[in-house]
Amino acid sequence: MTCIYCPSDGPYTEEHVVPAGMGGDDGKWLLKDVVCGVCNTDVFSPMETKVMRASPLAIARLFKQTRSRKRGKRTAAPSIYAPVSYFDDPQSGLLLEQELGSGGQSMVWPQVNYVPPERMTVSATDAASANELIRDLGALADLLTLCEKLRDGVEVRYRLTFLRWDGVAYQPGEVDSAAAAPRGAVWLEPLEYPNTETTGTLTARVFRRGRGAMTCRAEDVEAVASLLTLIRQNHPKLVVPADATSISTDTPGIHLRQTMDPVAYDRVLVKIGVNVCAHLFGDAAVRTPAFASARDYARYGTGSVVQLSIEEAKKFTEAFPVLAHHHLLLVATKTPEGEKPGCVMITMQFYGGLTHSYLLAVGDVVPNAADPIFVVVDYEANVIERHTPESFSRFAKRNGATWRPIDLAGGSS
Ligand SMILES: [Zn+2]
Image (cartoon, rainbow, N blue to C red; front, top):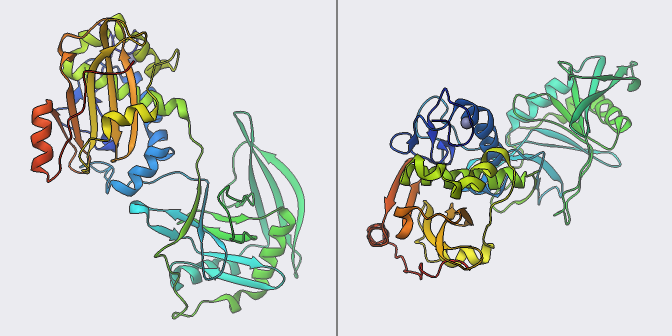
């Protein structure tokens, strides 16, 4: 026997049917001795992390799921990766540097914005963190290394510009290049407007993400030199009084930019589908040629898997009860050509909204898939349950919701 996804004969590791970070079960819903450590750890885990940090699923998870997994030292609130993340501050009119945290809570980083021609604005969630930044900016060294990350295809290089204090101002000096970012450097990030920007002002600023390095967002090196000079000359005036105006975060406008890998997204969801089938029908079922396309697509990203349009998939999921669960529905269906029944389709609804349908097996029916199977993932309790249409209906009722039965026999065409 080999791994269900590749020719390796082990060693095997425990594979979560649904990733633990998405609320999967740590106990009963594990695949044992069927997925090798390479597939699990080297291929699937990084792909899942990517999808859980930068995709529509990542955003839904951030808002809906309060912790990334049930227990263990890795329990934490979900977070996302967004290289551009602005808080549209109604008071100052500035697009402020922020991070969107758990529950969609906006956290404004401590920052100093230069508003031409001669104003500087200090923003933070509280006076203490603002003043900590001002203090550190006042104590900047006479020689600074400004570091820019440059991407050339897959290769990453760093452009270094040295800023020297001449007693009056920071002067940009020699430029260098490095393969790694030097310690203690000040970062320069581009002044990027979000596509969704309407009224906010984006100006040169310096800020710090949590315990991270000092970061400037500015047009060029000269703009950074001017900004740091102004701050160094005026930093005692920038100290924030304890009773400074609080930023209202009741109805913020948020601008986020994420770079998503759409193939990784589909591969992760198809893999969940294959895993569910392996768990419900046994690993022998997913080893059949019927599942070959789905297996190879999940593992290698090769070939393709037929999927329904979101509108078509929603015909199955719009009848689902509105509960804090993922809903997965497996049905036997027709082939894409509408011929003999013999395919397995999975429709998944995540966090009450995101809906996807994939054709997992083509042409060779899995005996037990003749009846629709519901799989419900309680992502807050990390519990997964399997249901028949009847027990799913009772489950919905128990939770104060209703499930409107749909025509499952019709399937896709
Ligand atoms: Zn493998």
